[in-house]
Length: 66
Image 1 (cartoon, rainbow, N blue to C red):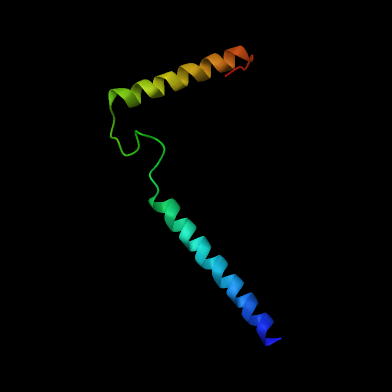
Image 2 (image 1 turned 30 degrees about the vertical axis):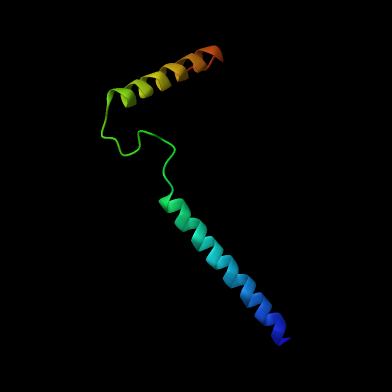
């Protein structure tokens, strides 16, 4: 019975360490958005305008009232 408890404790600790490592990696990973951290530039504004234009086209295409 004692060895089963050791195995269970080892598995739980390994899962906890793995989860902590994964969360740390995610915290330090670079964002996919190239404009992340930018205060504002022409590219970001253009990208936002294109997004809203695409949304409007999509809504018209599918008959949404938005």
